[in-house]
Image (tube, rainbow, N blue to C red):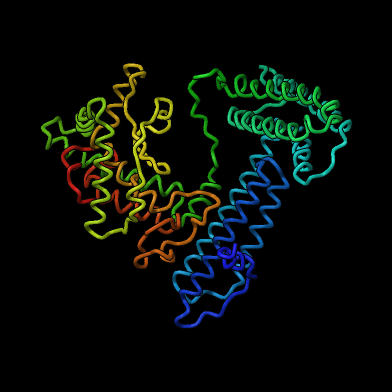
Length: 478
């Protein structure tokens, strides 16, 4: 226990800003890093304890937490060191992003609760359990039965809203909101099951009163969930059915705020203009590549040719592994980014299933796995051919280097609850300022390492959009 004493004392230190003088930047950086770790741990605890996004109390509690931390950061003496100043700004930016997420969640909850106005009563039951409050079984049984009746009434109103001529008091909604509500009902049903299991069998009076109302309510919620998913959202619940790509759009205002938090100084419309300009450049380069290949001089012809240059079945994993090692070797030989030995050692390949390839059709990195996309034996013939064409050697080169170990593991996979918002330059194992040698800021280095690798290893022509053959062999970057 004694070896943990310094850590325990550190966690008990009050929030006081030390006076930073010349030569004390390291101490200042360490102090701020400790605060970042404390913030991450506290936020993770709150998000875990108040786990249901539909809860208004959860949103209010998180708002108080964020406001307290932001006020403390704004009120502290400006750090004298560059690294500490960056960390402070990144943490403030992160807190503001969390605030944006909370406001978006509240707006979405308002839409969702129209389809499940009974939910707050169930959320309060779970909140009381977490507060270890006693339960009056007979009263709780009546609450559950009342909620069951409310579920039936709400479903009937939604059914009326689907009619060609809906009744005046019917509930009309969209597929997106209905699908969101169905998923929320699934979480609510799981929460209710945990709430019931907590006392069932341990308190005989509770089971005697509550079991029947609980079973009836669980069945009603499950039926309503299926109705919203299948009849309103149009999503099949059958086992093995392909899930639809039914998005839940942010809206322009939320998108603008998200861009601002990422320090992108453009509006969505300006980004589209930039994208069209870059795409035009890619098309022009594609025409050049087509002529060099002896084709008809159009970029689609060059792309069609490149798509035929895929590996045979059973060889795609070797291709991805070789390209990932090439990316690591490229960085190390040129001393561009310090690749930690553990990061270079602890990665492996994993083949993506046919189902996963519906949303991840190309190679991508996740945790310790370099996920490999390629045609599977169980795919329909047309799908199989497209999967092979889409994962040709040169298209694979676009996605493998920035997704490989130094591009993702080193440059910070974002994981809530981990102190991953510490800037790279302040990381204690950094070999030099700005070099990423461990988990660091998603704001400072996650994009930097990935962009360096991508610009170094992908084509100087149109490989980013189309995968031209003639320039995919160069490692020059545009």
